Length: 354
Image (cartoon, rainbow, N blue to C red):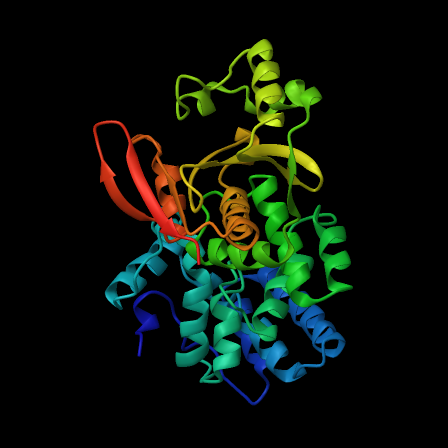
C-alpha cells in the first residue's frame, strides 16, 4: 500500500457511500475545480457511451470519476512515488512525468477509494494512452476523456471520433490515434499508445499498392525529395526529377515486384521485392518523410510480405539497411526479422515469410 500522505494530505475528506461526493470533496479540498468539472463531464459522456454500446454504466461511471484523481499530486512527486514503488517507467513517463497520472490515479482508486474491480482499474490506468487489446471499458473512458476535454472550444478531432463511433468503439479509437500521429500531437509517444496504434492500424489503416506507371515520375520525385531520406538510401537512388522519371520508367517495366504504397488512395512511398531466386526476395523501401514515425511502413511491409507469400510462394525475404538507419533496423526487428551479418556500413536482416 502506497503512503500517499508523504506527498499530499488525503485524510481531510470524510467519505460516505457516494463516490461522486467523495471525489468532488477531495478535489474541492485541493482547489481543483476545473478538474472536477472535467471529471463530471467525462462521467456523463462515459455513461452515454455505456448505454450506446450496452456495457455496465456503473463501471463506466466509477472509472470516469477516478481517472484524473491524481491531479492532487505534483508530477515530480508522481515520478518519485513510481520509482519508490518499483514501477518500471516508460521512456515517455521519464521525460514527461505528468503521463504517470493515469497509473497514479489507479493507485489512489485502490488505496484511498477501495476500488478493486479490474475493469475499472484497467480503464483508469490507460485512459490517456490506451493499450494493446483494450476492453470496451478501456475504450469508453479513453474516448470520453477526449470528447469532454478540459480545454476551451470544440476538440478539433471530435468529428472524426463521432464518425468512428457510428461504427464501433475501436474505430473511434483508431480515428483519434491516427489524428494524433498525423498531426504530430504527441510530445513523446508512450509505448502503450504505439501498441494500440499498431493493432488498430492493422485493422483499419487504408494501405494499398499499385504498379508504377510511366507517368508517375513527378509523383515519385515529389514524395522522395528529401535529404533526410537520401542519407539512408544507396548511391543509385534518384534525386533529380529527370532521374526519378527514368527510374519510374524502369520500375514500370520491371519483372520484379515493385509497388507504389498508397495511403487513402494517395502515393506516399514505395516497396520493392527483388527476386534472388524463385522463393528468396530482397526488400527495398522508402516512405515520404512527412509520414515517418506514424507506424505506416510497418503495416505496409507486413502486408507486402504476406502478398509475396500468398501470391508468389516466396519463402524468405531480407533487407540490408545502413548501420546508421536505426529506425529501419527497429522496424525490421519488430516485424520478426533476424540479424544475420553486418559490416561497417550495412546490416543484413532475414525473415521467413510464413
